[in-house]
Length: 164
Image (tube, rainbow, N blue to C red; front, top):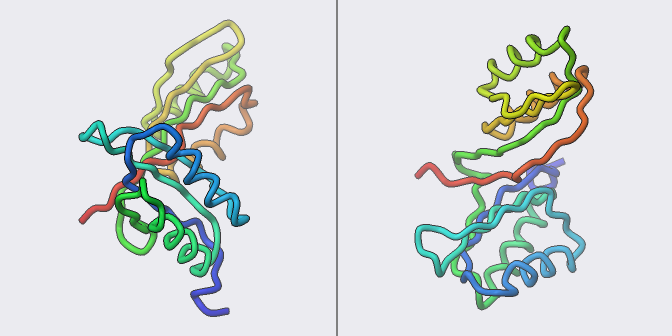
């Protein structure tokens, strides 16, 4: 299998006009062609008239090429960047509610601390941890807390920016 046929998660950012309907058009364009969006985050930039969309789309290089070409054709899209091929910064924020007892609270707190997490709520039978980190660190943390019985999870989706 050549490198062009490898299925991987592509991280794409698009600067778009901050107008009603732009998000729906972009999502419809991608999903309408049978491609999945695994993560999506949209927020205004330093210029309130422009928003940055950060998307993670799984597929081979052909999928990435099609998504990029289609996005670039949209009137409301200013610039599309594939961050996957270059060094880039990424972060994700998660809130995780775990079943917690007197016996395991300190272990949960220590684990959260190792990953830079913070306890933001403690109830009789549960705790909520907030963690912000690189996508891989978040995935590693999620794997390690599985034995504690995850009650609920809320994830922000990945935000990303090129380093150059």
